[in-house]
Length: 69
Image 1: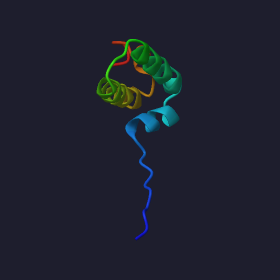
Image 2 (image 1 turned 90 degrees about the vertical axis):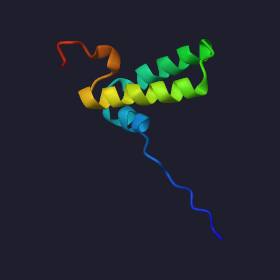
Image 3 (image 1 turned 60 degrees about the vertical axis):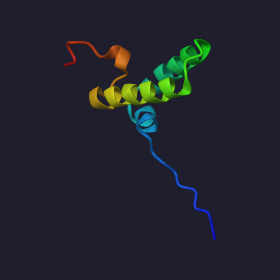
Image 4 (image 1 turned 120 degrees about the vertical axis):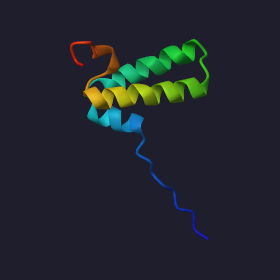
């Protein structure tokens, strides 16, 4: 029986590829969350939410303003 390794295109990887500056902002978030010893599930879930926002507005979440809405 052969084992097939599947590649998943997560929402975070989509945001890293498609949204300018998201990869840098994501790296800073992960670094800060690691330093603060946040749980892995917090990092995963919060990252996913940030990625959805970034994809929706096509910019990193820290650059979304009420004028963007």
